[in-house]
Amino acid sequence: MANVYKNDITSVATTDLTTVYTCPAETAAIIKSISIFNVDASTSIDVTLSIYDASSTLTKNYEKKASLTALTKYEFLQVGYSSVLILEESDLLRVTCSTANGINVMVSVLQQDRT
Image (cartoon, rainbow, N blue to C red; front, side, top):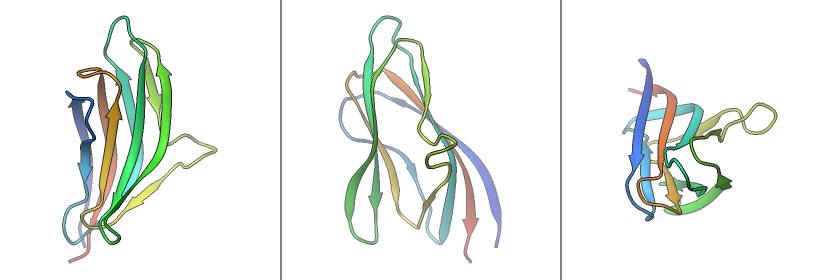
């Protein structure tokens, strides 16, 4: 069983539901950080984080950050709330953003290969 530490960075280019991380086959993912950064210099942005559970084929909203001010960072997994998130094979982290080309998303994860 191999452990791989990884950072995935995605620039969200649309207001549609966008996948920012996919848990690989035969892998469990321990998500330690999901940070978003509003790259727009003048506009506040609403961002919704969703999780697609492949075993139930359902997408559920996890958290919404309303009015993330311009040039500001926000951490979804904060101490005192949910500080770790576990994903299983083929589960997805997805975001919806109120402004196209408005955010960068960084996911820090420990992937544990189950083979």
